[in-house]
Length: 342
Image (tube, rainbow, N blue to C red; front, side):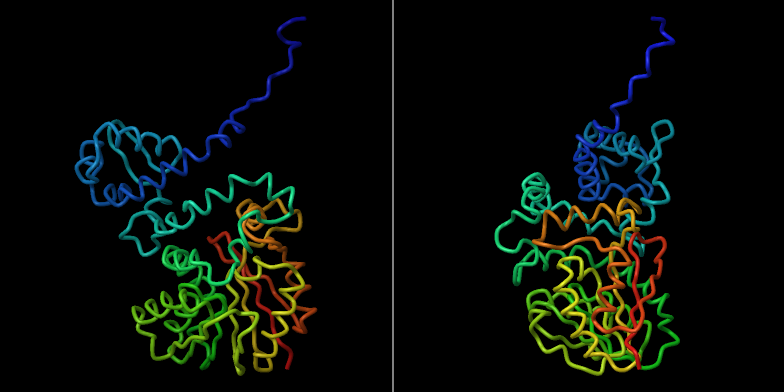
């Protein structure tokens, strides 16, 4: 057999990259903790400069910065480092689109531990965490979530506001379900000075939302409903009901039951606005949205990343007249705008 007859050996690089993906996560988390990206944005370009600015060892900073360059998070020319367009936009603390705070929640011990038991969750068909996993009543993780995820949520909320053409809108009464940090409702209130927001969540989480409302200067148009979204009185007369990253925690039956209550709380012609990780019908694209189903498998008893067809069916079964899928570029999430008939 000649060398030409020997079949090419597949490259195992992608498998090893997956085995060691936590290296990348750990390095990015360290860079955010050291504020390395902000230091580069402020003019510290060499390892010496960065070590002084970040209060870290020269050896440590050089190895970390080189590792980040191999992963595409930094550019390097000679001995000088520079931010990429992505890290300049999202990981420089002075950027209005800064998202580094999300690392606190997304790399928390709770998240790490969930993914240490994927096999057990696959066997069971749901979380193996104690109780109900992340949807357990008054789970303290949601306070951490609210504080860590406010910045990326604000980015997404602005995209939603654009879709809804909020500055042109009439006075609105808005219910923000599972409000958390409150930034979806708060952002609409900032864009529409005649909008009034009602934020619904656990009492401990709403403390964060109230802080954010005060900081945004909309506290006079911001009130709360404390408790379980499936049990409390939602109120009535809403023009909009916001459902940001809520439905994916529950099975179809629970979602449809809740959506019937949402429909009843809306005025005729009112709309429910769902923001979700929505995969295509293949369930393997777009990558981030499709991958989110695994997060729900390890974290919830029955949640999922639902396709638009599945969400549209839920809303239709709950009595909504129509649902429309809206893209939110450059976000990896999508919105579904569902209208109650007149």
